[in-house]
Structure formats: C-alpha cells, structure tokens
Length: 138
Image (tube, rainbow, N blue to C red; front, side):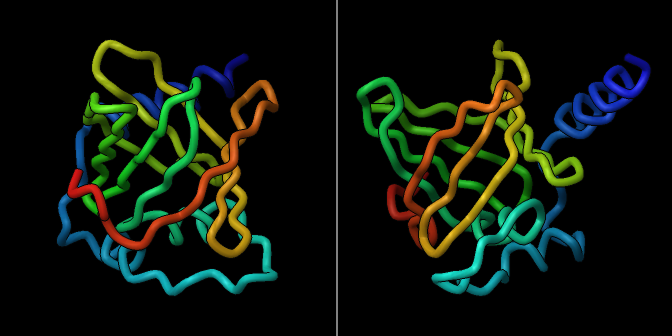
C-alpha cells in the first residue's frame, strides 16, 4: 500500500510538472531512437524510445485513433476528428498519460518491429501500428 501511494505521488508529480524542456539530455536521446529490429521484442524504456517523436494508430471503440508522443512530454491524441492534448511520463518500465479532466492511465509496453502493444494494469492489451514522425500534424 505504501509503495502504491509513493508511486502514485511520483507519477502525479511528473505529469503535473508539465512537458519537459527539449534541452534535457534524456529527452533528446529518446527523440533520436533508431528503428526497432523486426524480430526483437523491446520493453520498458527501449520500447518507449521507439515511440517518442513518432505516432501510433489503431482502432479504439470502433474509431481510428492516432497519437503523437512529442519529446517534450506532450501527447496529442486524435480519435475521429476530436483532438486532445495531455502529458506523458515514463516511470520505470511503465508509461503514464494524463489528459485534462481524466484519470492517469499507465501502460506496460512491448514493441516488435512496427507494432506496439500497450497493456494496462488489469492486463488488457491493445496493439497499434507505429508511424514515423507526426503524419497527422498533431
């Protein structure tokens, strides 16, 4: 229980701090990640390195979802024609997202080639295609 409270506090502090400065060395390193080998499974930070500066796409409740993960800690999500802006934070091997007026959502990541699987805390996973850059200009 104590660990869960501490982890929640860390995640909340990271997300409330807002997007990180692009001058932070760790953030620049993430943005310059090379493509994942097609047959190698990446998890945690290695997997997240494949997503920062890129987008994902797939179906969410029957509608097309596109999300762009900016190196400064901003996430932009488009479902249908609706665009939302939030923040992301990598906590250990879990990435957490916070959108205005929504709860924090955290996921474990697994990247193989150009696909990512995001698994929530209940064990439910969703698979998405990784798109290079920000093709929807989010």
